[in-house]
Length: 68
Image (cartoon, rainbow, N blue to C red; front, side, top):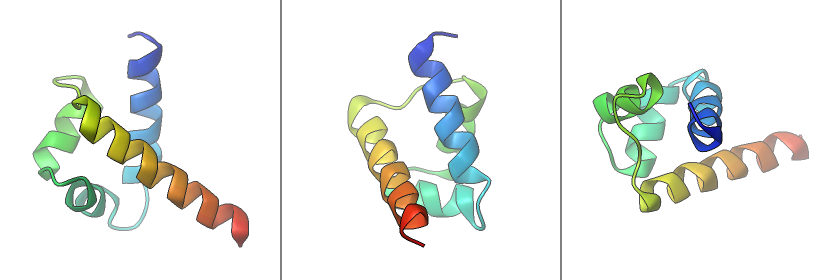
């Protein structure tokens, strides 16, 4: 597992651990729950566009938590 895979895994673990995490994350990115599951398990990886969306969602959520 290289650095980018570790980063992806960490973000997915954080995002899908939240209330309604997996379903909400999949819906916001525009993929299925199965796709998110496959990314988490290393069966596949997001394309560049979906990885950017994932990072944007994660950053937005982190910014929201820091404002509380």
